[in-house]
Length: 442
Image (cartoon, rainbow, N blue to C red; front, side, top):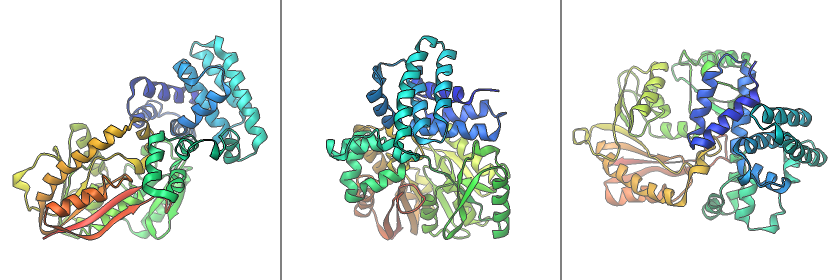
């Protein structure tokens, strides 16, 4: 039996070493250990995601309680300690077992001489956490600075594990609501399943029952009978109904946006930056066999992700193309009833799920995205038929990428806003931060 904590350490070390996509590494590791029990895979996913998500907070606690600062620790020891602190504070794992396993893990990775150091740091933190209370919030609070000791930007950075420039951005954009939004993004969130429009309500209920029987917690979304939020999933691809195409992974906010575009049977739809294909699949179901969807993205890898999804979901009316959305395609001008322009963005709305985004963002990188979005808009507006619909959307919370880009379109091209701008925030529903506007071409 593989040690689950050792597998999580493998994920964290690989992601830190190569600065690669943490999500892709975790998916590969779950494939590698696919023979493990579903509960073991769910624990691996929980611990890996939680440790990545809370990294800034965990390092702050370790820097307070360790004689060696985190940036000076050996990477393996640093990640073992992060995993240990995460379990002690944010999970119900017995602290004595966490300490014991962490020390053993250091020894197995060739650092037996540092076992005493690992033991001392974690036992000290565990004792203070236990004295603070039984809830994760009580255990965390005892290690945090007082709110007035530093600027709000710094405090929120530590409290919600965000780079300081991002917490500063949220304060600037959202004012008094900033902390509510940051709080809603922290911690482990469920995976949102959207059940196929081809299923009857009875078939949806049956599919949900099968997934629950596999040990997954399924929480229904109020008012949206095809949306469920799943917890303790393990590897989603192994769940009942996945291979049959009964459900797709799509956030509630993305679902709302595509529905707002008003796609009807027989429509010709273009999805410009489509990977991994959630919007394409929904557009396909809405357009029906009488309609069609052309789904594009910039690389073979992304096109393959779309193809995998549409094949599994049995979308027969979709063609997938490798295409750079910034390069105009003259033969497609005025061709589509609906164009979905979900542009590359800073991703500030999805950092509650894609946890490594916040560590890879820079202020300079965020600024460069605005020019890329303009280029995509300049090309994409051409494809909308006269009287047709353009859906402009992002998964971020930033006026420069959202309202300012919509204004750019309406000031330079013959489009008027018919719905929006709509900024969805993660503290108002179980959803990502997401922006969309529906425009009509003259």
